[in-house]
Image 1 (cartoon, one colour):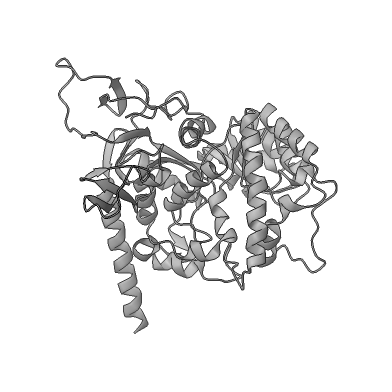
Image 2 (spheres, helix red, strand yellow):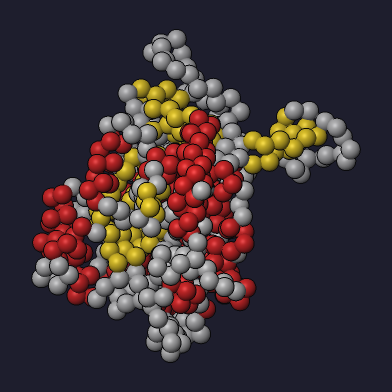
Length: 475
């Protein structure tokens, strides 16, 4: 079965012919077709467009401790991600990695790099245009912005438009909010910051001892943003209208914050046993000097606030979409018990929790991601002439998005055949079994197939070797 990518229903069975990195034909094979170099048997499987991770970070270290980039790349490919938008990494390194990915000398998704290089010439409004031009000349794919004053935002976005550079903004608690960036035609707003801020009658209440440089304070109070008593819902709806009218894309990265609403679950998901690199494990331990490692005595009260905050946030995403807004999928992994790839699949699940149908969720991850990048004329759909980025899935993601998780899922079988757990099963029937299955079998990028079980085996070996080296060093 084929899931096209734009939320139209799945169809099939059919064959897909890939030639020179492109989808050459969709339909029944015929004797006149060119002889294939390889055949992937998709019988009983689902084929989706390659997924777009719209918010991630290329990381070869955590806390200045080395971590293999290939570890991250394997996990993303194993989760079906064939294109990534990096929104903050070492520019010199990421430029080299992007070239290697494009040349297929590195096993990795396609990379688009949105850099902060534009800040290097100074942050005075008169200096900013030169910085933007410098970043353009260096070859960045787009610009990453953080919270700043209005005159600075005007300067960077004005020059970005002149240079035809797309932009992504992580809004902080600053003078500017989502209203400002929508008026200035930013390409995308990341996370949730700045949207509710634009609809407050006044500002968010912070205790007198609040320290914005303290990660516990910052993330604890962030979970209260959508619960502020002075949040004006009419203003909030107007902010969403403004974002839609200015074609601002929203990349929420809910999974980056989901540990805050259920810490124990996040710390104990089963795939961490085999696939958590010790460098990342150490980085996640509470430490005020590390971004996002803020779980010092995290309380149930703080979790409940985040749970309620999520309810409002999810409702706004649904409203934004209903108004015609474009939502994309990004995982912002490497922080806050959020593991590369696994976090991406968790984001898909959270979007379904927010009220989106699985077909809509897949559209967010494919067609919408391609639109955000300006690549929707050649990426994000299973369509003849488009880039051959495809994933072959063991199971039906429209029934259970979790089959995309590279760890796999438990599946009920009757007489050896998978069945719904709503099937008329008879207690005591020995023909009923529970097996571990699911997962993506193949991830195809530019027509090149990568066998996911092999990628996961290699990743597990990386982790095992790193743990052994660490244990040896500790002796």
